[in-house]
Length: 45
Image 1 (spheres, rainbow, N blue to C red):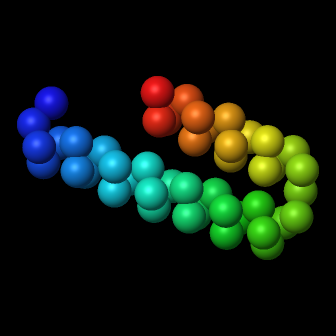
Image 2: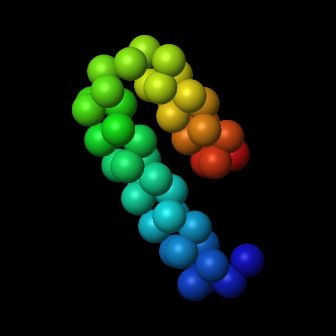
């Protein structure tokens, strides 16, 4: 991957992470928090 590709990938992960956190805080649903954290772990591998 190029430098730009890596930076873009990291940026997207950060945005998704903040988005998932915002949704889980709004809903306060354990299931949604579980799903968002699993998606994050999969995305960071």
